Length: 264
Image 1 (cartoon, rainbow, N blue to C red):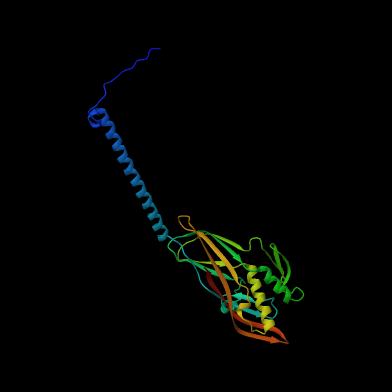
Image 2: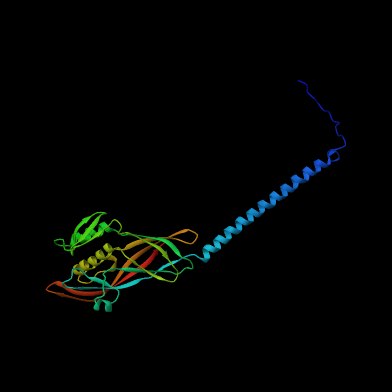
């Protein structure tokens, strides 16, 4: 097979002198491409940084912030009812406007909506049950307790525990109060605790003896960033009125402050 070889005269006058017009065009094209690439990289970097700054400003501008205030309730017992009933005011109690639950008022004082709110409750449930069983007579307060499943109270009410310690809300808009119900099992246990301690200590016991309730709140901002805050509810009581008859409690009325403290 024939092979054709073309031999060109070598240039010996120096690199730059030997460059042909086409060589210059190629070099200039490469230089332009390099300059354009560097400019594009700098532009992309600046755009990314600007995006981060804008995102940070947006997060700060529309960041939600949940505020939970202390709540005050009245607890009243009159012989003939099973245990004391909670009410948010003595006036409503006299009007018989009582639902027996405890609530927290949550307000979003931030600038942005809080979304997909999840509230989880936690307290030393087993210790509370053991304390009540130790001091009750003939299933006076708790008839049956199945750990993690259900609790049966004497007045023919039962609480199923599977979803008792978790609440969810879709959204908290700004500058609006939302009432969140505390676990009903905790409300009943707190009332029983107070009744037992009143009988045991003749209406003279410290609030430190009462069970605390811890809870966490997780929510998302407009950029889908999650925030989790943890709190503790510490009941504080003030005895208002009490009476006994034939060695048994006939009535009492006290004030219960649900003191909210954030856990750092």
